[in-house]
Image (cartoon, rainbow, N blue to C red; front, side, top):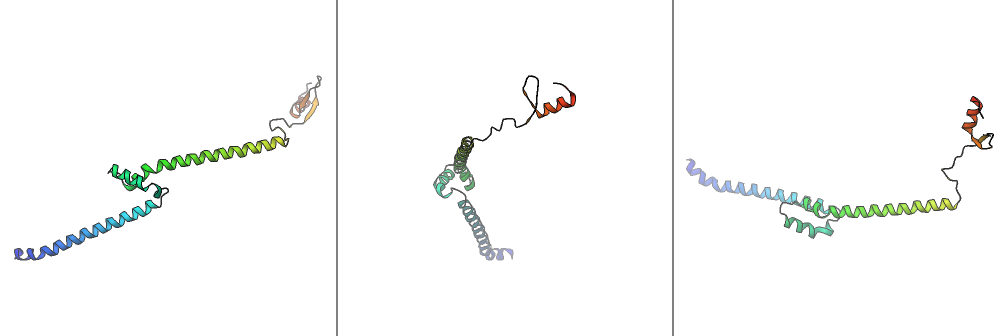
Length: 141
């Protein structure tokens, strides 16, 4: 009896396998489209799409993300370094202009002592407030 049923079930089983394969293929296609949509949002992807594709074709082991990383990331690093260098140069210019403006305004030297003098020694040199107080308290000239 099983011999009579198996030939009749074979087309149903084949249809089931075909549907399962089709559903699996659809799931893979959907996921691939999602990945592509995500990667397209990354910086410089559109500008380097041809290079990314070439990298994937040259190295079959590379995923889309791997190819993007190999092609674009070094360029992003170089662009960021150039921007950082430009920012540093602009900051230096601002600081130098500020220093020059303050120097031209005749500001007091920040390294100079601002302690008032409090007394004189026998030789006539000016004492600092600390030295004068120390000598008053403990004696000395």
